[in-house]
Amino acid sequence: MKNKTLAELLEIDSQLVGGKATPGLRFAERLWEQSDAVDEQQVADFLEEVLRKCTGLLLPYPAILLKRKKQIERGEFRVTPVRELPRLTR
Image 1 (tube, rainbow, N blue to C red):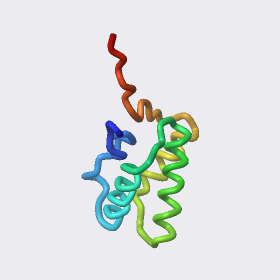
Image 2 (cartoon, rainbow, N blue to C red; image 1 turned 45 degrees about the vertical axis):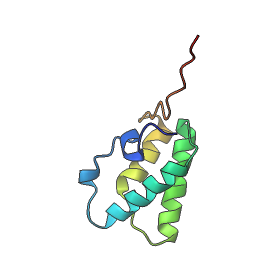
Image 3 (cartoon, one colour; image 1 turned 135 degrees about the vertical axis):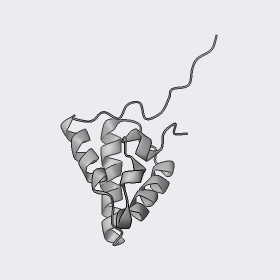
Image 4 (tube, rainbow, N blue to C red; image 1 turned 90 degrees about the vertical axis):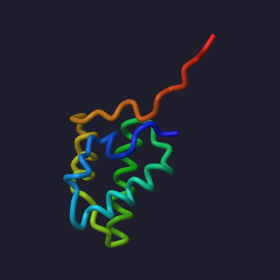
């Protein structure tokens, strides 16, 4: 189970994503809930998949998704941890 929404993980202010891109962000959030991405490369790959699906569906996506994908790939944006690890008890 994920501890963060996609917007929280990518530090996206949903209030700033407006207009035609809002449905694209909601679509990305629904896909994120089903995703098993746990590290930065997997998150970048997930974002690539979202961008391709949105384009294929003619669904406008927020430009911040593409920006964050590129920032992750260049090491300019960190997305750790995606999930909290379970605590071991003794």
